[in-house]
Every structure is written in structure tokens, then in C-alpha cells.
Length: 224
Picture 1 (cartoon, rainbow, N blue to C red):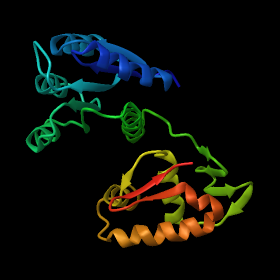
Picture 2 (picture 1 turned 90 degrees about the horizontal axis):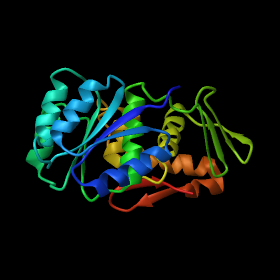
Picture 3 (picture 1 turned 60 degrees about the horizontal axis):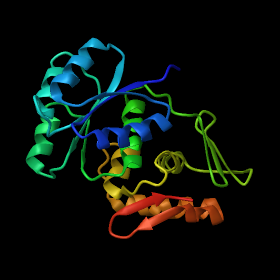
Picture 4 (picture 1 turned 180 degrees about the horizontal axis):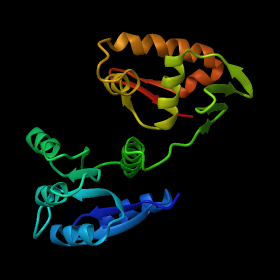
């Protein structure tokens, strides 16, 4: 597959370089724009941009104006970056069709993980069929899991839960996010469902069950 192109828009050169460095390491092509007007020009002159990372506060045109311009003619995924953590800003972003909303300061690794997740949802980034972390090897195509080379029998939901954990390695995941992602939005269960599945999953993974860390009061993190 050809490398995917991402437009990074921020008036701070240091911020653009930080984001670009992490994206390039993941094999993305990065185009930069230093203000809103430049972003709009670049977006409409380049037809191959797969995703836009867009700062809110910028000269000439702010992020909201840029978002409106892009959304008037394109459904390309947009991640908004902002120094504000104002709920009204966040709601405005979603009304304008923003796919993800990240407040500064943020972890570049988390930003890249969100980029990859959005592109997978958009079917632009093909998820790897094989996931191998530590002693666990998961084959999504064959629906098989092996620990230290030995097959482990998992239920359908346990398999989906482990896949979700491994695809989001190192990211703190709230119980709500896990429910929404593994059980989908129309699931009316509660957090105890997750805890029960995690307990069974840990048990079946043996010593490697310790890869699933509990974050008290929030959820879980898969980490080796």
C-alpha cells in the first residue's frame, strides 16, 4: 500500500516538527501548513491527503473556519488540536464534523495511535492480521491466539477484547471506551461486564495475563 499523506496545520513550527517526527516514524508522509489560509490552499491543491491534524488558534483563518471550508467539500478525517479544554469548543468541533478532539499538551504517541485508529475505521489503513506482543501471538484472520507457542481457547468476546487491548498497547482505556469499542454503542451493559471478561481473559493467558494492567477508578492498559 502507498504511504498515506497527512496535513499537519499549526502556527508553531516546534509543534509541527514534533507531530511530523512521530508520524514519519510510522511511515506517513507529512505536509505542513503554518496558518489556516495556507492549510486550505494546500488541502485543495493536493487530492491525496488522507487525514488533517488541525490546530484551533491560528492567524489568518482559525481552525473552525478551516474545518468549515474542508467539510463543505470533503469528508476527510479531521483531528482538532486545542489549548483549551472548553466543552463548548468540543461540541462545536463535533457539530462541524470533527472526528477527534485532542487538548494540548498531549502525548505524541497517543496522537499517532488516534490517527491510526481513525484511518483503520475509514478503511484507509489496513490493520495487520498478526499481532505479536511479548509472548502473545494473535492471528485475526484465523481467529487464533497462542501464548508461548501454545494455543489458547478464547470466547468470541474475549478474543475481541484481547485484540482491542493489543491494538491499543500502552494506551489507558476507560471502561466506557472499551464498552463502546468492543460491545458497540448499542450495548446496554455496565462496567462489571468488562471486569468479568478481563478476569477470565487474564486467567486464560496465565502469567501473561499480567500484561493487562488495572487503572483504578478508570479502566485498563495493555502493557508489557
